Every structure is written in structure tokens, then in C-alpha cells.
Amino acid sequence: MALGYPGPLAFLAFDHRGEFARSVLDVEGEPTPEQEGVIADAKQLIFEGVLAAAERGVVPRGEAGILVDELYGADVARRATEAGVVVAMPVEAPDRDVFDFAYGADWRAHVEAFDPTFAKVLVRYNPDGSAEDNAVQEERLGELSDWVRTTDRNLLFELIVVPTAAQSEAVGGDRERFARELRPGLIVRSIAAMQAAGVEPDLWKLEGLYDVLDAQAVVEQARTGVGREQVACTILGAGAPDETVDHWLRVAAAVPGFTGFAIGRSIWRDAVRAVLAGTLDRPTAAQRIADNYLRFVRVFATASADLDPAA
Image 1: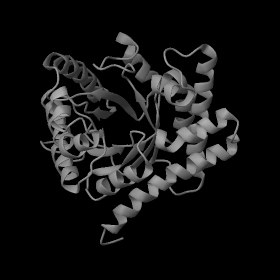
Image 2: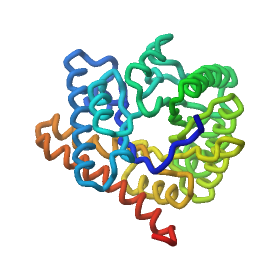
Image 3: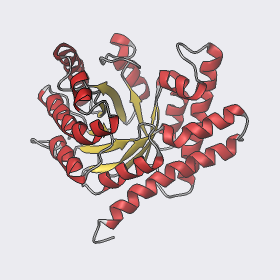
Image 4: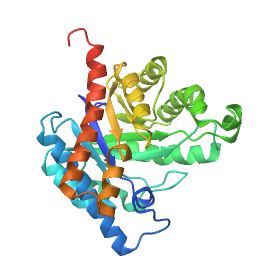
């Protein structure tokens, strides 16, 4: 199967596991069975927001997507597939500095059981980080990539570049300076390292870029080499303020090869917490999630149209 995925994709991401409990329930450590039930129901609510957005006809269901996990969102994944929504599901064990498979050696069976549009992996990687850890990750990710290719599936690769101590020191510990000055080049180098290791995503899910030239360099690397001409990139939200995410989307929309976004907490966190606090009813929360999702859709679409002479 050729690399890449045709057409735009607007993902609502809620495949968080440990992070979901921390962000929504303020729970550190393992949630109780009761709390797990609350998390599962919250994910149903978020999906109700996706369906509410789809009903408005702004985004065709073939372009609307979700990132959802098996642990708390198995029913959502099945409902979404039946509804024609694009589904991506994680294969990584959560909250790991070094990538490993969820469900251990049985990870393939779990992908096959749900047959999502994308097998998705989140990886914390820095080309200047631990050579030993990087080598372990590259080997495991190569195994994943090979299996995805041989079984005619799609791979979504979420890359998180964690600064090394030296890199943090170089920008005086300023996270925004790191994001603006160092991260773009590290993203390019990380993509190149994965490609050299035989890791071949169809879609790269990347941290926000502040400059169009940086976005162009990222796409150029993602598509370098024979067979990668249709590989695409998408922007993640990282729970950042709306104005920051809007800027990232406008930068990405200016560059062919960026096909949309994969945003999560910025869209649903406040609405879900309000329902749990009893200050917002469920139908209103679903519509608010739909509003937030479609607002980002419009930001990206408007920026894209502004640059299209035929629009």
C-alpha cells in the first residue's frame, strides 16, 4: 500500500489515558474502578460532541476523525467506525519516556480486533538524546512500521521532542524559545532518523510550528525519498491556549502537505469538567465541544482558502 493518506483530516483527540485522569479528574496514580467508569462516560460525551459537529454538515464524516483508546473508549471506537468517522487508536503504553507496546506481545491482536483507520503511536524522541534509548525506540518502531505495511494499514506517528538538558540550558530554560528556535530543526532531524531506521508513517502528528519556513522544511523531510510523496503532516494542540493553536494552524495551512489537525484538551476539557462539576448539562456540553471543534476546523480551512487562488 502506498504511503500517505488522501484528503484533509480534522482529528478530535481523546486517546489520553493517565493524562485524562490527571487533567479531568485531578487524579494522580491509578484511578479507581468508579473513576474509570467516569472516564469512559466522559469519552462517550466527547464523541457525542463529534457527532453533533458532523450533524451540522461542516466536515464530511470521511474527513472528521477521532483518536480514542481501547482502555476507556472501546465502545466509542466501534460507534465511530459504524458512523463513518475516521478512527486512530494508540498502540503505545501510556506515560513512557521510551516507547513500548501497550498489551505487550499481544499488541497486533488488539489492532486487528478494532481495525482502526490508523494505528497511532506517540513517541518522545530527541536525536540528541540518549543514544541507547533512541536505538531501542527505533527498533520497536521499525517492527510496528513493518507490520503496518505488510498488513495494508495506516500509521499515524505523534512525535514529541523533549529537550535535553543542554538544549534547555541553551535557551535559558525558556520553553517558548525552545519551541521557536530549536524544536523545528529537531523535528526535521527526528523524522530523518526515523526514516533511516525504516519507520514509515502515513501521517506525522507534530508539535506546533511558528514559522512557515519551518513548516516547509518539515514537509520536505517527511516527503523526501521515493514513495513518500503523499505522506502528510498534521498539528497537535498540546493543550495550548486557543490563540497559540490558531497561529500554529495558520502556519500549517500555508504549507501543502499539512492536511489538518489533531487537537484534544483545548476542545473538550472545560466542557467535560463542567459536566462533572454539575454546572453544565450533557446536551449543552456536547454542543459546546462541537462548537470548539468546528472553530478550529474553520481556522484551518479559512487560512487554507486565503492561500488558494481558486478559492
